[in-house]
Length: 125
Image 1 (spheres, rainbow, N blue to C red):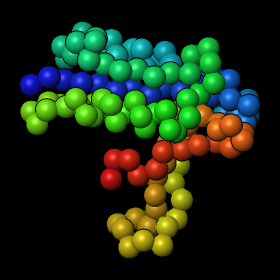
Image 2: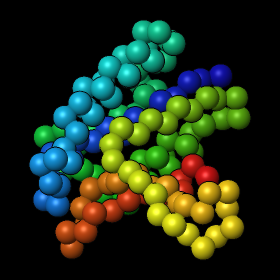
Image 3: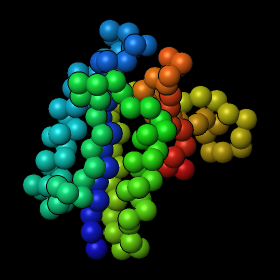
Image 4: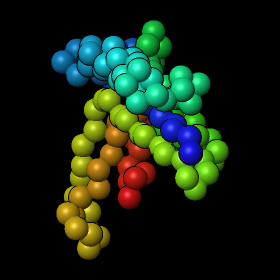
């Protein structure tokens, strides 16, 4: 059994569409602290933790993040454990589906080439 970690942590500092009040200055340091916590406290191997940040660059767009997440999940074996952590903005919107809440939750990603904010929705459902 192998433990894998996947950590998204976004400050949104370099996104053109981000308002100053939407910047999450603690997101990236928190991600690094959590990664170190997994290694030191729970014995995760550093090479088995994938961390994606927007440190010194724009927040990655949805297509890139889904690709990285898919690559991580593909290498899992039945007995492996996988921890996913998202530190950033998100939200939910109403749906017409008959699910338990009537909402779809999403995680906010970077701006696409047209300047529109992208998001990952329903990836864990």
